Image (cartoon, rainbow over all chains, first blue to last red):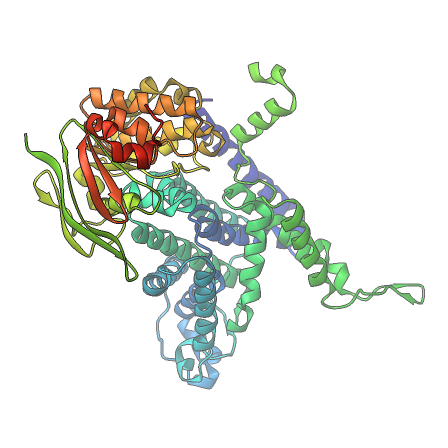
Length: 355
Length: 240
């Protein structure tokens, strides 16, 4: 298939997806679980793809994603709360130290930019580390940043450990879809560029990549900064989705959730991460909810079902995936027109090859 | 004719151990020069020092009149020295074509890269057949061709090959040495490192024997092939 046709077909599919989302939104009530899953799933898809860029495509095992999301979310919220409402939000800190409000789009872009700035700063020392050490260092950064944001002295800016609210949010399900689609589109363009190829070369063999004249540190840093930028944007979107924001929610567990999505979807597959995000959110918010509620059949209480059991089931699912589907749903393949036609050809033998 | 690459008194230390104890050799334009020696003699270290992948302790490396000691790996490639690393080291999860494109990473003439890839395919038709296959699925010989092709994509003036025959079947080794001769006939200068001393000496214009960080013998390939000490140590005394 020609490259142009492929692009057009993929764009048409994307348009159909948006149409479907629009129809679903029109026909179901605003509080339906499906809408929740779509909104949160789209945001998680962006964050998972940003993590995949680092872990799956560049081979850098980083666990700092929640930290960068937190930076992004706070940057957005702090800068976009209406001036009139700041007194109420910052009631413990005399209305806070900031007395202006930025438009939401600027807020989102700055969210990414500040997260990227943090990545550039910690990248210098941290990216010289390898594999596990990099993971530990980035995880440490995420925890430190969460502690700093809750620091009492920073209260006039971050509101300490209290809630941030009344910043602009979104209503339409199409908003997170559009935002995620644009960002993921940019990441895909990057992955398919010369830089993306260099990232993958570094992932496969650092020494050979260096011998080809690829500057390891510069490329690692570029991947790290770009990944963090989109994690920051994702954090801002998540803050918009939630309506209120508290640093305490961005724990390491959040990074693990995203890592789980990336692994389930397939390291090195963008569409895998997207599919896995919706699956994951659907399971955790909707399909597996019943595991957390106590259930009675007559007077018999079903054993094990109580708050927290969902996470146990989740952990088992992770173990099964890691043991039996080590490459995830998609491996490093993509779920697009070309991928499907290839799969059909393999599945249905030579007859399909001519079609 | 002046030498393309002049290595003088090169010393490299690995954490207190002297891997190279001051070696000197020259590579002349258009020749195949080979370094032979046993495991741990310092052959790979020499290549890595020239490529800027390891730090040198002292000595000089002069390439086409420029001192390249302070250069990093990137600058060395840009100067026109490409390497076929030991054990092939192709990028296994990239396609054959992507591997070749990576080889041209530092080239600025984007439009000519496609033509360069076609040249490589003409040289190695097998790679053309496998264009969209992942490099990890190729056979050992094909991977070695790809590694050579990838290095050629940088359009090097000097091609350094680290044990290209390693782990390949004897027939494939023959192919590889045929390729090396062919590259030479096209005017490419080659610095070859080999444990397979017999095959390496047969195609070499100049050869050096490396033993525990020192060069102990040197001469034309033919001269070393005939040398009794080389035959005893590297060819087995029964070798013809």
